Length: 142
Image 1 (cartoon, rainbow, N blue to C red):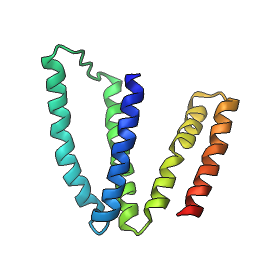
Image 2: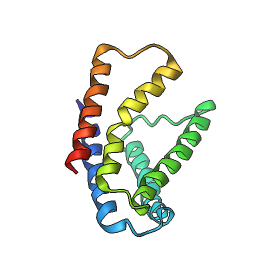
Image 3: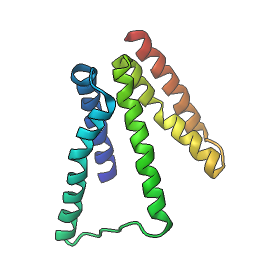
């Protein structure tokens, strides 16, 4: 239940962020926007860790080869953020950008199956078809 709440909270916050990017920050250089955002995010992450520690909550830090995965994740996040924010600066519409985001689960599960093996089940295939229909309707309506 908590995971679902956090996922929905993230969805709402990303939607708000998309509208702010579209309406107010489109004209700015994507890297300038990233620097500003990361200046806020880094201290917040550190404060979050300190708060967890002060309440004696488990704070499992990466070690060994996992540290390299975290660094790779940071690199991927940077280029993903730069691309996402850059799409606004390059003139893409809010509908085009948010429609592309709708396809993230489809692409993520495809990448997962390519890496881990296996094949999607009927429910996932139905979801892919539904996502394609949703994207088509959003684009036609926007």
